[in-house]
Structure formats: structure tokens, C-alpha cells
Amino acid sequence: MPLHRHLSKGRAIARTAGDHASDMFAPLTVIGRGLRHHADWAKSRWRETPRERRGPTLFLTAAMAIGVYLMPHGLLFALVALMASAAWAGRSPKAPAAPASPDVADVKLGALYAALTPYLCGPEDANPLYHFEGSYKSAFSAWEFDAEGRLARLDLSYPAYFTDTEPAARARIEQVIQGKAGRAREYRFDWDEESNRLRITALAPLPTDIAAQRFVAAPGEIVLGFTDEDGSARTIPVVRGGAAVQQPPVVWRTGPRSSEPHLLALGVTGYGTSSLLRSVALQALPYADLVVVDGAGTGEHACLVNRPGVHTVETSLHGALAALGWAADETERRLTALNAARHAGSAPPEDVTRPLWLLLDHPTELSELAQAEGRPDPQDLLELPLRHGRAARVTVVIADDLEARDRITPTVRATTRARVVLGPAGPDEGHAALGAPLDIAPAAHAPAGRGYAPAGRGYARIGNGVPVRLQVPATVDPLDDEAPAPLRDAVIALLPHRDSRTEAAAVPPRPEHPPVVPPTDPAAPARPVDLAKGEPMIRSRPIS
Image 1 (cartoon, one colour):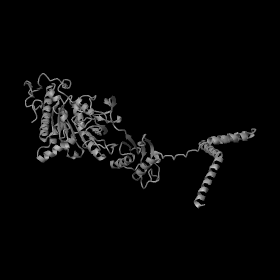
Image 2 (cartoon, one colour):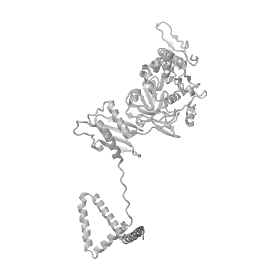
Image 3 (cartoon, rainbow, N blue to C red):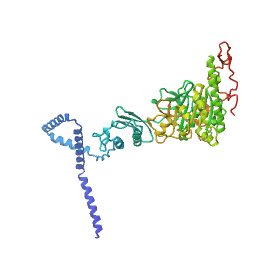
Image 4 (tube, rainbow, N blue to C red):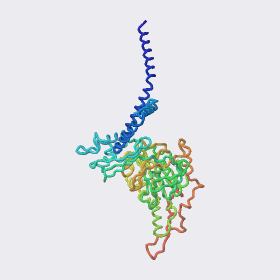
């Protein structure tokens, strides 16, 4: 017989013997498995028992064993009961315990602690709070993770010798924390310099589905957008997703009693600066007149052409110079008329009390063109409206590219104290644009869009206030076919028409008599002032 047949026959005999042996010893295997389960259960209960209760537990167990021993056939009954329970407990093999998943706090906070150690470890510190063999629990006092396992809140301590008063040192720590916690979110850093503590909070995303609509605000109040609950002292009702909800707004107050009568909005191209200008124009049109200068020449504001209350929409250098020249003359005329009415003690004419808004989109491009052609800079014509606009009821809103900030004239930068920055701006760029450091670390990737949601994310600072987060309402160009139809319809519904514009409620009544200037000579009679003579009003005389 060949050798391989002997080997196959031997393997079959061994397999049969093994099967018979397993069948024979199966009850013993089940009982042994059950006894092992009982032993494991007893060990776990013993470990969970407090130390002060282990003595009484041993005493009661010994008393029960003695009682069973003294009972007639007690040991036999106890052995049978033990075997039966062991057979029941070992009837099915125990599944191997899955390896315990590591704690998310140990993994992420440990990595963050190791990343902060080179920046917060002092070489001469005898008892360092941060060292390379230390634990994060010695420096982190409280933390919280969201449902997705991302860091939501962290409270940490840092050494007293850390230079927390230097912006560069703070920015370095904030950059490390944001890199380990996730760059796709925004974080608020609250530095407590007195107690050497830093609190980090991950901010929830702002709503991006609020379309253009008529907001609840007084005349002269402009809703720039919406922010967090901590960034605004009030809420207003808005329609969001077909339902009315309360949202905290960022309100910019304009007019003769405003401390910040002019606005400068800087941003990256495609991140909503033109959308912000359209939103401001739609809110100002019911009670004001507009002059729009589109320096980029992209036609973003063509929807305002020939609308009631819109004097002109200029896209060329020649038209922009003519419009801004008229605005400067109009500002001077308004000042003269208001001064005359104040001296006469009478109400000023309605054409000088109705607000006038100058909206300029990317004026630095026109400045470069004017410099190339040897013509006056359009920004220089804004000096009079900017410096005396509050008294003359003239408001200037300028939107430009973030990289063009150095090309904006010093007069514009000095007089526009209401600031907005949109798009991905770093700490240095945000500080330069807003005039104050941000206590919020911007996300690495800000949402972009073609003038509609989710564009318009950024920050706002009104005067000397604290910078707050900002989400501009989705105010799309209604002539853009790629914009969603519901958003375009919302803007079209807000555009004024000839039959829908009512000025009686917003404009004070025209005085019956012209203002009178008091004479310098008491014996001379008072004489009326002819304000219509040489009046450069755009309603009666077109800009040339």
C-alpha cells in the first residue's frame, strides 16, 4: 500500500477519535466553562466590594458554608446545585471580549498637550506644568466633546511666565490649538491673564439660509447681518426656512446722531461684499436716496438702475467723477441750507433732510484708472461727504478687496469707523481691517459663493466695540441666472417700483415759507434765502 494512503487513513482515524473524545468529555467541558464563569463573577464582585465591607462579606460566606456543612446531605445538595448552575452558565462559549476603544480625551487631549509643551515649558522651571513626560490632566481642568468626537470646550492653565500680553505669543498658542482641534471651525479664546487660564470654545456655525427681507428696524438702522447670541443685545424676527424665528442682528445705526456714520467693508473676491452692498441699498431705499458707483464694472448693481430713489448707477470713471463731484456739492449745499434754517429757527427743507447714501463698490480700481489717465482720484472727492456727512445726512458705504486696503486713502480709513471684513482673513489681516485684534480664530476655509448663501461670512466692528461674527443675509443679484430662484424672488420683492414707493411717511413736510437768515443789523428787516438758485439737485438737473 502506498505511503500517502497510510497517511490519509491515519488522519481519518485520529479525526474520528477526536470527535468521540469531544463528545465524551462535552459535559465536563460545559461544567468547566461554567465554573470559570462563576470564578470570574466572584472575582469581579470582590473587586467591586468596598474595603470596609469585605470583612462582613467573608464572615457571612463562612457562616453559610458552615450551615450547609451541618445540614443533612448539605454538601451533596450544594455540589449538585453548583454543577447544575455551572452547566447552565457554560452551555454556550463566552464570546471573546472586544478590545476596549481608546478614550477620545486621552487621544486628542494628549496630542494637544504634547503640541503645547514646547511653547509652555520653561527650561528653568523646577516643577513645570508642561513637560514631555507629563499628563494632560495636570494642565487641563475641564473639557467637553460633541457628538462627533470633536473638541467643543476646553479650560487649561498655563505658566505665569508665559507672555500672554503679547499678541504674537497668543497667536502662536491659538494656532496650535486650532490645528489640533480642527481648522474647519471657529474658536473663541478667552484669556484670563489674572489667573493664567485660557478657555477655548468651539462656535456653532451661523445660519446661512436667511434670505433678503424687510427687517424690523427703525429708519436709519441697517441690519448688516446676524451673529451669536452673545454678540447682540437684542433679537429680531426673521423668516428662515418658511418659519418665523428670532435671530440676534448686527445693527449699524446711521444718521446725524450716529457716532459711526460711514461703513468700510473689505473682503476677498467672491465672499459677499457686493451682496452686503445690495442688502444695505434695499434697506436704505424706503427712506433715502442712493448714488451707486460700481468700480469693478461687473454689473452687480444693475438691478438698481432706474429705480425710484436711485439717482444714478455709474460704472465708468467719467460717470463716477461726475456723480461724486455732485455729491460733494450736494453735501456743501445741504450744510448751507441746514445752517440757514438753524439760524432762522425754522424747519429745514425736505430736500436736505432726506438721507443721501453713496455706495461705492471697489473704488480703488477707479483710482488706479484715474491715476493712469492723469485725472482726479474719485476717493479724494469723498473727503467732504465723509467729514461732514453726518451733519448733512450723507452716508458713505465703501466695499473693496481686502488686498486693496493699502490703496484706500487715509481719509477714507480714518472716517469709516464701522468696519466689516468678509472671507478668510488671518489674525493680522483681521486686525488691520477691523482696527482691533480678534478673540476668535477664523476657520481655515470660509464658505464662498457667487453672491448667495453661504457667502457673506466674516466679522464686524462698530466703532470701539468688540468684533463679532457676521453672516450677511443672502441678497443675490436678481439678474444672475445661476442664483437660486427663491433668493432672486426675495430681492425682487424688495426693489421699489413707481407705484409702490411712498415718501410721505419718511420725508418731513416741506415748509410753507423759505428759511430766513437773521440780519446782522438789528434795524434791517429779515430776508429770505433763495436756496433754489444754483441748486445742484439731481432730481431737477441730471449729472453731467
